Length: 478
Image (cartoon, rainbow, N blue to C red; front, side):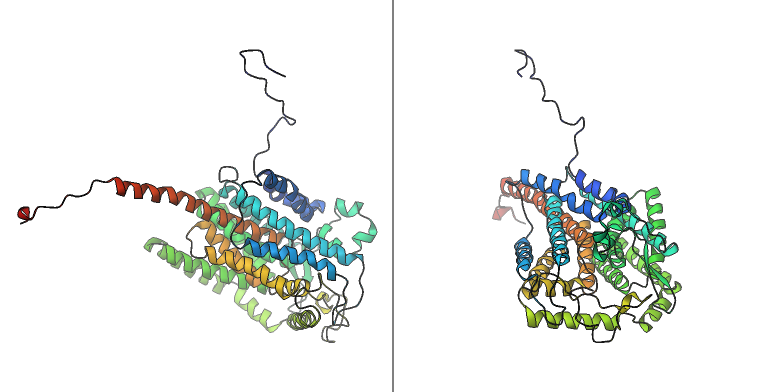
């Protein structure tokens, strides 16, 4: 319809009475995460929300950029897709055959790899005006608070578990599958007897206790940045209270992987602060390090660490599983792998003894579990493992010398990720968070370089246009 001559054309009516702000998809996924978890949809929402993210990227396909090393990641994705061709190949030391559930697990992991790729490009290609880094940092800091609350509930009320609405409507054939049940069944903790008595390992609002540990370490740098370092006094006091409360589930979960990751992150952070800071920052860092050392020394942590070392619990099982996984992959399909995990043939050298009531660790986990490194090697072979690790190694080396806050936070996440890969499975929320961290520091670094170029050009022009200093005549010299 044309407007009346000489008047402003009528605006096209909107389909919706409101306009969705850029970056809304990430806010919906993370701000609503506790609700999605209670509904049994936490993991599903993160996958589904990648669709509008991908649509945004498609509309900007002419201007899309990717980080250096992204070719290695694309190659890894291609290698994962090729894994479907060997999905039903018999692997040495594994049970032969396999049903539809193997394709389900393979498709689920592939979906997470694709979703993590999309969120990396989404965060990296949005401008600072459209999706401010501070906003993303606050969302990740909020997720640390959610993780802390879930950890406290799991520590003090470990028996709580719910039947989610999704679990109610799914067929019993699906909910009876342990893999599906873990995803849709909200549970706040696992209860294990590691030190000779029942001990809760918090997991809310995630599907596994190890996922809770990796989420804590990955969200922590952004919580410190947005709720303490760059916060006003009232917000900072609240942040310090949350941080102090979060130490209870960290200490009493007996999570050795998390302890090690926090130590590595802390050491890296101290080194970077000493490197980039002046005397005031150095003094503040030294004071905080001393205070932290005193708190740790006076806490139950040293005694619990010693008790945990004296009770290795799953060490033998993990070592045997890693050996069996490596041997099976290297002898059966060293380049491509077997596409997905496989059930162990027998009971892992008769050491674990098989499943027992009240002893979750006595069973034999599938080959390719108990560490993402072993999953990569078994499912995607040596080639896929190298491609996966190469991408993150390139990103770390590109940013580890930078002084920006988001580079420091992102490199801390990658350090923790490298340690967790030996013992934790990184698919789902952990890998998704790592990709957000990579996207943030990649974009921040790119924007900083773009801002530096005009300033350098302006300085160069100013120097060129400055009048040349005339030489002093010889006779005028004293």
